[in-house]
Amino acid sequence: MTRHPLTGNEMSGDAQGGMERHQYDVIVIGAGGSGLRAAIAAHEAGARVAVVCKSLLGKAHTVMAEGGCAAAMGNLYPDDNWQVHFRDTMRGGKMLNNWRMAQIHAQEAPDRVMELEDWGALFDRTSDGLISQRDFGGHRYARLAHIGDRTGLEIIRTLQQRLVALGIDVYMECTVTDLLKRDGAIAGAFGYWRESGRFIVFDAPSVVLATGGFGKAWKVTSNSWEYTGDGHALALRAGATLINMEFVQFHPTGMVWPPSVKGLLVTESVRGDGGILKNSDGERFMFNHIPEFFRSETADSIEEADRWYEDKKNNRRPPELLPRDEVARAINAEIKAGRGSPHGGVFLDIASRRTPEFIKKRLPSMYHQFKELADVDITAEPMEIGPTCHYAMGGIEVDPETEVSVVPGLYAVGECSGGMHGSNRLGGNSLSDLIVFGKRAGDSAAAYAAGLPSRPEASDIDIEAAKASALAPFEVEGRENPYTIQQDLQQSMNDLVGIIREGSELEQALVEVERLKERAKTMVVEGHRQYNPGWHLAIDLRNMLLVGECVAKAALAREESRGGHTRNDHPGPNPEWGSKNLVLRLNAARDGVDMTEQAITAMPDDLQKFFE
Image (cartoon, rainbow, N blue to C red; front, side, top):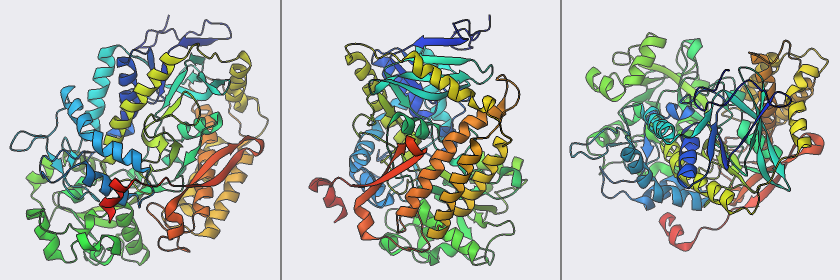
């Protein structure tokens, strides 16, 4: 009898209808940093917990967060504290952040980092033996706790090791296609084993979504195949709301050559450790793109910027360390003006700034990545880089204290949740976001399950409906190929909902998405359920199309430029839009989404004073 390698659960599907069924208190969907931290917290709170992941345990985008984990520990600069970190986060998000989430994050991040160290994470050290912290864009002080340029990998290793040691069940290569409800509350989840195609039902009153983002809806992206907006779509279909969906972060520095690795991330640590951006004329162009909002704290000459690396406390920071949206827009402007590199990017140069020994010690992954994949020696020559679709600020609307959505029993953390980062995320805030809110979600989900007088049970009718929905691509009469639809969606999102947007193009994108949704209704999958990647993609496409509509619709409505959302026809921020967010809900009757405006809750005076 074949058994799951970690849980020992039978995969044969001997249950009636070839369907497995398991009972838990908390199901965590996703095995990145936020999912693992939530599962550990729920387990330690006394709940029976399982982690369900689409890929393999350890294959998470947390690993891509190479530069560090932002926490105001004050190890290098004693003046740093949670108030300054909070202020930086809110300013980076252009004040659209949920201020309470930003406050909790800044206050609790240092404790969560120290907790990781207690669990065995091996952080780089200062000469005094403290956890070392490095500089990143948008942060007033050096506050990113790091392990070389492999910080996310070390955090995943640490959390994964603890998860396995605690004996928490893990269902790998298992895709969840539907959330199950009873009387308006969560009752469990329905999915299938990717290898065999057999169905599986999880009965649980608490579900934590930790599924990451939706970057695979774009052609050029740092995201892997798993990032198809599953959590966003699952939440919408369950009755939850999405917020801030127009804000998509295009990381300034992704590889542009060779084509096989186009979009692969180049960590911000390269700029944090002294790397500079140059155009094809050899000009260090970022001095020409400093926004007024940041001019008072950004160096406006090469000499002043260079002094900053030697005396960081008393000089304004280099413009290469502006927030990511500002740097991405500047790079895009240089490329559009004809001053780009031969392969459509710009140059990132650290070779002329640091010794080979320094680069290999501080940036070992970057050195090997370029050497092995692009035959470029970054200790001797510049890199060709350009903006790549990287991170979703928008996600499931949650309560800042508990991470619960508007659906009882449904929680969301990490990139699939919204509110924390506002219109733009600062580098390094992603890793601390995962561990801060992962713990809170796990604690809350366990408490909710324990407090129920009786467990809601999914109806057989709903389970059969979920099964029929998953099998639909095998039953449809048509000729559309899921791979062709995915390519067309990615091209449309890249061309029409990219880093620089126009109202007419966004309208065109919505028309295109509707056309693709119609084509998807006649999408055919051949063969059987075992080892069938076409079937997997057909299911993923439902999610990508729904999320693509959300992004385009919100981007069309927000007639301003702010953070990760830039409108060519509405340049600059509009004060009217600075006090409201856009919220999206599923309209099942027309297989689309409806959108409403929502006023931002006023920040209390004791926090408001930091911005005066």
